[in-house]
Amino acid sequence: MRIGVLSDSHGKLKKAEEALQRIGDIELLLHAGDYYEDALRLGKTFGVKVKGVAGNCDSYAPGPVEELLEIDGYRIYLTHGHLFGVKQSLARLYRRAEDLGADIVIYGHTHVPHQEEKNGILFLNPGSIAWQRLPGQYSFAVLEFHQSGYTVETCEL
Image (cartoon, rainbow, N blue to C red; front, side, top):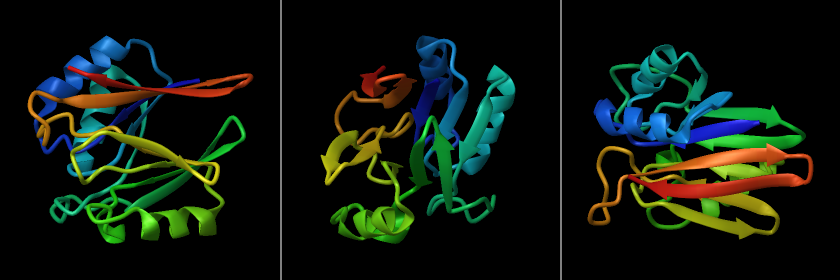
């Protein structure tokens, strides 16, 4: 299964659309918040199933603040991250992931791409597709599941 991962689109869909065209065929789009409605629009435009969460900038368009998915035997926890103070530390998010038995955590909020594994849990932040914090770095990720596990690629536009 091939999954596109976006975050922090903030109503600016041009780069998100470019990312999805570059990714190509996917079976699922995960959107880690800030402009939950963007996830729904992108899913409709590209004809792909979407799971998204609301972030700190989504008071006008309520959506779930977290999703727990099971894909190919892996538990994937999707959240924006603002409720866990991810700009300071991943400690609170790590505890939530442990409580849920998550194998993969996808989050946003920092606008900076990040990938690390801690005690068997992958933490993946695709960065922002609309408002980069690092110069010139609009980013997204591709998560692909295989019989032998999964691969993750963070990409820049």
